Image (tube, rainbow, N blue to C red):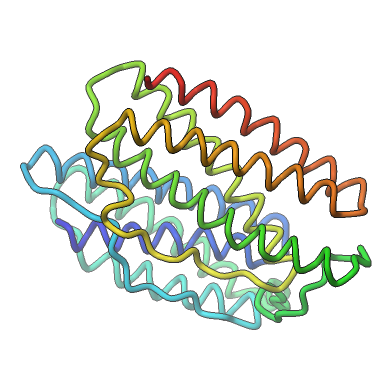
Length: 269
């Protein structure tokens, strides 16, 4: 079962980061929607694993293939979907996951049949520019550092809160974890899209087991509140450093969202 969980974890990341990499708005939107389905699959497989008396972890071997075209991205994704299908058994959950992915496969196959869908992918070109905004190098450097650190942090929070949510019987905790997971999905999407626009899209680094196997929830929450305060400070610093009104508004927006995350986390205490 742990092999299937790892495969679903890696497939979720593949679909998610494919959605970040591709510029076509409709394909991007469709792939992101598929990624939310893959995340639910991952959650369901984790729940089944726990109910069977087994456990799972967040180990992964996946690397991000730095493709130069939409079709390259889609072909890699198609191969991973077909490989994952070989792990399914004959049960209700696996049948559901297989039929979901059969539809994804048919969708991708249809896209590949039309050459008009192929286009350059610039998400990995390392140009480190931000669209038509002519930011000075020091601002580009600050934005780059922020995006790498915060995309990892949001990925970490999604997985840590999901791990804890799967193991709690406290309804308040469950609901708070869900809110925080949803918020972190939004932030990861926002930061991933920005990284792709700058040509620096990359997978977040792996989580160490000690990061998500929380033994002292009170210490975890207190430390988490401190991290949220640090994230707020990073947003404030970046907003003050970048001389672009649109980016300033965005980072102030994220800053105020982090404030409410702190209030949510206090409920866990």
